[in-house]
Length: 265
Ligand code: SAH
Image (cartoon, rainbow, N blue to C red):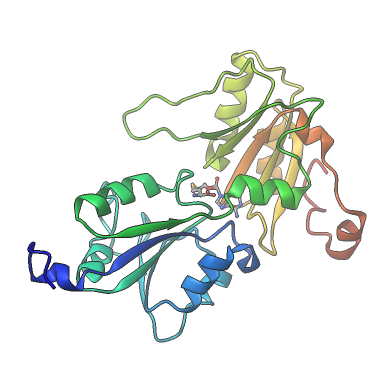
């Protein structure tokens, strides 16, 4: 049965690069839910919510990975060595990634590395934070009257690369990932680049989780509002006229008050 490239290949397993969504466990895809609930080996990073991790069987091996994982110093390495190791030993490894693996999740790099190591893998999409936050906050990402495009942007360029700003003269919606510590710089850069300081903006933190916060303002006052509200990571910055089109369900507003209490509301 050997394919001729070593004993290990006979038992080669598989890595599932699984999108864990923005946090709420019922926003997992059906496929992701099946994989998580049946997992024997799970690797996850700090973005994966506790509620999603609670679905992992108690007997499963858990491998915390990612930049803040304890004792983890493989900042530049893309996939945790144990993930490859387990797969080469014949295990199916569920590699959970917050949101969608291919949206700022380094899923592309991990896939490349798995391919190079000849480890079979499959990608399971997830609801990216921008989609979860928009739905949860009632902010449409596009709108026929004011936003014909939506651009997903990272507020942090890779080390050594210049920060990338999208075409700020376009009037589409911009969603900045990893933006909480960069809100001030990002808003200032957009204004310097030509966007009106009155452009509506919102920060949505911990979207879809019970402690979600929404702070609404403009490019001019967003940084101050966010500081005053003391919002916590992870958070997204949404910019564009769509923020002014925010529609909240009356039922939801009355029922949970999740989005009340933040500055700018
Ligand atoms: N692959 C992920 C993004 C990873 S980058 C996805 O598709 O969503 C990490 C950034 O995503 C965070 O810094 C934050 O900007 C954003 N993010 C992830 N989960 C979030 C959440 N629940 N609420 C708000 N922002 C979130």
